[in-house]
Length: 353
Image 1 (cartoon, rainbow, N blue to C red):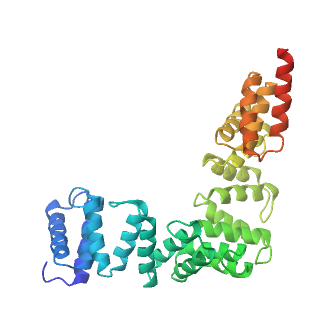
Image 2: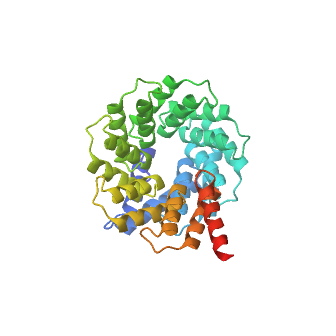
């Protein structure tokens, strides 16, 4: 072991970590590597200190010990190891093995980001975007996201695209926004594929092209992106960018509904009621309405309330209808909920007189 170069040691360490989660690797071989990591860490090797900290954090080669793992991360960070600086920042941000301290997390992210650590720049940008540990600043959020984006981070590239689209921290420029969406989409990042698809669908920063939008929505939908699944289903339903296909449309809208999209669940309810792309099924219609309502969708709540008020698919129950109308009205985004609630309350009071 002592004759190994640092690169050879890192390769053996990586194999040991993989082997720790694979049956058939002799425990004695793993223990030998972990003991060597500890020895090198105690001797002051920064990379070994970070490696040993990870062993303690995740319980590789021994019991988990987050507070002790943090101390080893800190030793490596103080020597300038960028991955360790990032880990110290993340530990302060999340409270891993140390008290949560957002301003201190931001300072460590800043130290690493200024030295070119891409992931630190991305997280620092997020802290500025949400005002966590630092004063909220769209300009600073843009600056650090751009650093991460230029380093190839796909989510940062998507964020830069949205910053240009919305004029957040930078002058609005939808063409430039599309450029950054494309960079992230080309890496297979589903959020960016959806955003780029939306750009083509709406003609924002590029000429409108529904066929191209469909291709991008499909790529994102295949990665279980809910909005992409819903949009793909809708385009198939109206025949935009592709041949009209209600069965295929229902497939994708169902996929979004099964992931909890209230809009998709209500769409499926209508389909089950009318037989659009699926067999007519009153029980299935009610199930989708109820899922939508219970998930907090105001359209679903109004619809379920209406079912109880008139006795459609369920026994008539005006007090249960009131419950769902009140939930919908409280959200203040459903224009009919307050009127339906007031009308039903008036009718119930009239009956009680």
